[in-house]
Image 1 (cartoon, one colour):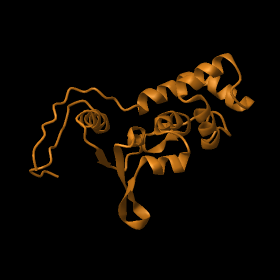
Image 2 (cartoon, helix red, strand yellow; image 1 turned 90 degrees about the vertical axis):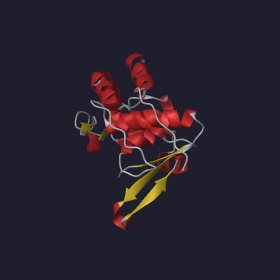
Image 3 (cartoon, helix red, strand yellow; image 1 turned 90 degrees about the horizontal axis):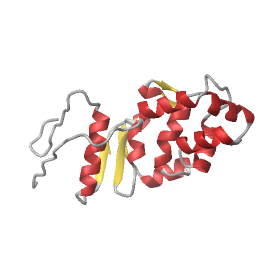
Image 4 (cartoon, one colour; image 1 turned 180 degrees about the vertical axis):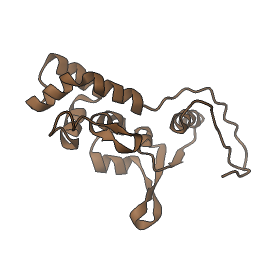
Length: 171
């Protein structure tokens, strides 16, 4: 991976995806576009017109671009909803279970509908605390497991703002 045009960055005590999220912000502020090559679904929350992913397609044994348009076509919502959605349905790769095992029937379809309507997990949980947001099983799950879902949010959130100095080189 070491190459004269590629910088290897390691920060003790920080996860690589958090370091990458920080670097993405710095690169965007400098006016550049970003392409992240990774199978990590956590990076979907960074997608924008200026941030694309290159993800492996194992069945085709190749990598493919995954853009904001792909995300919108797949989920019909903004990528900022991705984190909230994964808090409810879980993220197997990160070892974070959703609430399906606590509330049978509360799957991706229900979660996506509610997140699209309320915009974020926190808005959904605040609304569920004061009025009905959906079917009874969903309402019960959201009010009973709000702390669990907030914990998932903390675990799955990319942490930005690490003190990293990125050196730019002319190719």
